Image (cartoon, rainbow, N blue to C red; front, side):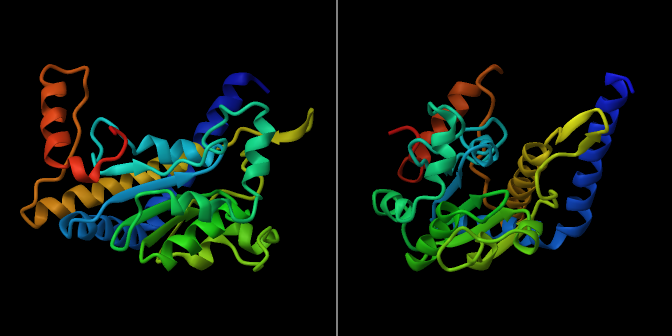
Length: 251
């Protein structure tokens, strides 16, 4: 079997997952985009959180050309991406009880805001407690997760619950347990993960919906332009100035 064939199989698998998300999550995407638009219109702030590779999709909607300027990253030191050394420490931090509460206590999150929590498995203490703690503070929570994990694995949180159990809205990424799309008889482990591709696209679909919903209400969506096109920096400076009290990645 050639590498090209494997590449095609992987891309076909990713396309299939994206089609499932498009068809099966349409109502949830609309609801999530509407919630973001409602929040922006009401003066609320938007935040996104993810740990490990789940953070990649959260980071993709923050300070993004073509994206909403009001989306802020809620960072947990050592758990955002794979920049911590050793990388396994990030995985360990996801299982630490109480860490989410400490982060929320020191964050600008307040009642009326929205927090997007991205966690593929949704089973670790950090995303579960992040959703729990945010809702206790009056924050609406959108969970982006693979619902399959709740059926096929056990929770690592003391409550026995998953991220999906503590959200106002849940977006199911449809990723299979293990996050690997390909197998070969000659390869001992499954390979080729697709969660980042699918989750990033899922969140961008939500933000596109939010932008359209704001425009439908006569509200100009606070969008950023690329700094690599003429006039982009000037455009963004005006957006930053107008929404300075709701953008936290510039302070």
